[in-house]
Amino acid sequence: MNRLSDKVAVITGGAVGLGRATALRMAEEGAAVAVLDVLDAEGLELIEMLRERSLPVAYWHCDVSSEREVQSVMREVVEHFGRIDILVNNAGIAGVNKPTHEITEAEWDRVQAVNVKGVFFCTKHAIPHLKQAGGGSIINLSSIYGLVGAPDVPPYHASKGAVRLMSKTDAMIYAPDRIRVNSIHPGFIWTPMVEAHLSSQGDLEEGRKATAALHPLGRIGEPDDIAWGAVYLASDEAAFVTGSELIIDGGYTAH
Ligand code: NAD
Image (cartoon, rainbow, N blue to C red; front, side):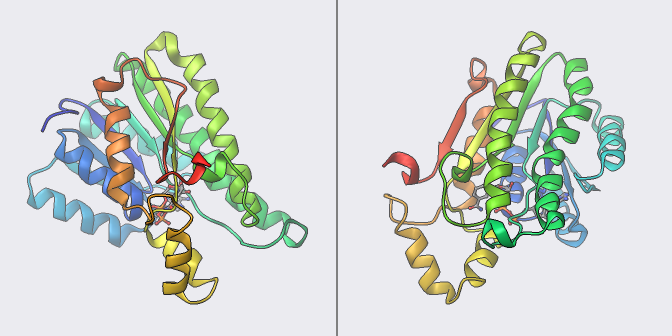
């Protein structure tokens, strides 16, 4: 399959979970993929696995909450692969799960630094390269928690709501440059983030069953459920899609 042939994709938080699945599917669809993460061992293992399949991939250590690191890694990706056409702002953290009145300023700020400022820094420093490439696609991972409320993780909800509107604003600002910007809103997908979240709340199997039941399709999602959405938004199949919200949630927000 060659839905992304000749394109170069940068995927933040690409070492595990949704980012990993997206890196894999985008590479299989013909993109050269730059995986950025802070989990170097997992990132390098993924790269090795993909290189064994002769897929053009490379790994960079990059903390998205550091503007200096983001700026220099974006430059290095262009030096290595020649251009950037696709940016997947996927890196994110769940942060503390406490009621609002118990959260410290530092706990609040850390979530915004990764989930919101990280999207800002990566977008800011990718845009000149996307313009240079004549256009492109930015895909921001928001969440169902950027659309509807739930009585948990307040800083996370705030961050994902911000990412939803940052996507729409940037869609309008950069439309004249032929850069499309869309958000993806996953329901619960089985990744290290969700496993850690459910483990912190008690029995994992019970939590898994209860969480699955929140989705009308009756299950927790798989990383590929999101990766295929990202492939679509990155591809020319989505040439007329910008400022949109791709909800992939097994029906969670339908009621
Ligand atoms: P995950 O925790 O399993 O993986 C996140 C990845 O981001 C990890 O590789 C981690 O090392 C990386 N990361 C964290 N902080 C970083 C930083 N400062 N710089 C660079 N990389 C960093 O999470 P996931 O479930 O795969 O989620 C991916 C994205 O999708 C996140 O933005 C998350 O909020 C969002 N999301 C996930 C779900 C879900 O159910 N899994 C649902 C809705 C939205």
